[in-house]
Length: 298
Length: 288
Image (cartoon, rainbow over the protein chains, first blue to last red):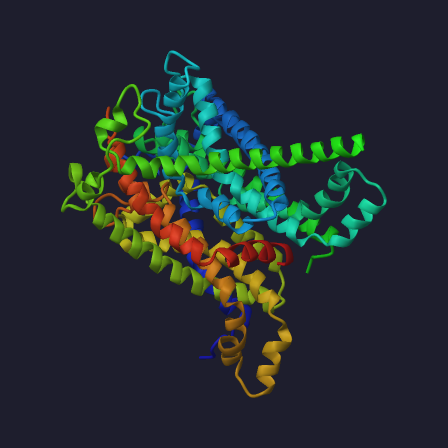
């Protein structure tokens, strides 16, 4: 028997590929299959009842599903843009400071260490209408007589969730953009000053193009875990009140485990997977182009 | 001279506005965490007080004592959760690093067909949301009987962390000049020796930062753990946090104490490698 000799790169990559196959790919194939069946957790034999595309048709015509889908896209758009702008602002503020930058940087990293579930719980506490920090402060300052039902009212609950989401992730942007600001060569900036550019022009035409790749790195990293919002929402409102903050991920979890309709939940899961893959590929593409523009590609 | 003075005034106003904005921003970042820490030391009566008590009358360790005292308040075995979390996170981080080092080295040093396709493929597996993955994983694990075990959680977290560690470590190995390893090989090292004696020490800082990320991800993960762990034999701390909630009431003080316990290891680790963390993310990403 001849031993087959594999190329070294394949040998090195093999462990990674095997683990990912076993834990990610295989279950995904299973869930693809089960999304075509009427699988219910409570009745294992239903795994073999083929129903064709029934689950997908049901999902695509389900108003609840589309509401959750739209809300998820809305949340991601608002949150990511706000995070980017605030992160940029914060990085610029910190970079202008002359003393104590190290301390400020350390403080900025604080929210990154928090588990998303902890963030959810923490803001559930802070926005609690009875004992929460926000209402206590507002009432003590005499700004409002009644307790504001932050997590009970639909619109306010959405705001609270976005606030929590932005609080955790702004620092990712701020830190990466700050690193970008440090890496900008000084010459073009000085040349611009000599040529009489206003500070806005300098920012728009020199600083911004330079830090763009860093913004895309932050976006790429964030896009890998957009579903972190699941933990936060799950704890803060659990999709309530009356499904006003139901995101696609909480809807999947509820359908799969609470209603035990695994097949249907997996069908919806696939749409969320495509959403995530779209975000990831999009930002990794952007990252590559931005890199090449700056001549950093390899 | 008048013009000069107004100019200086303007500059000063700008400086004050800058510092003020920065101060408010830092307040917003730090307050929620400090609020949690403060409340973990306050008796429940004071947390629930209406009108609110702003200046604490007494601080004590009651919540911590209850948490560590045997079975804990309301029967939450916090110490067991802590041990589970530690075992699962540390083991999966070490394995993820080894697998990631092999993979990252392959990407950085070898040229082969379909390289970028494999790379994107790896990244995409990381983007699969935990909830969507937890349903099929739950079925598979239940079938082969590794649900609610350390092993099941460890292998899950290894898979979650491998793509990102490969990405970061790849970036670091690229920074190590190829000539360095080649010189060592000419001097009579095998490729294996050249790796451990030359390339590994140079990229060590970067690998450490990849490790921190892997550790933090496993330490903080909830969506998968909440479904794949069922009892005290494998429940991790993020899942354990929910033990403090019941249908209508929440034990805020106890939760805050557990939250502090969860943050401390993450905090220590992050401060230890803070510098490399930023360098790792940016240079791994930009040049990688």
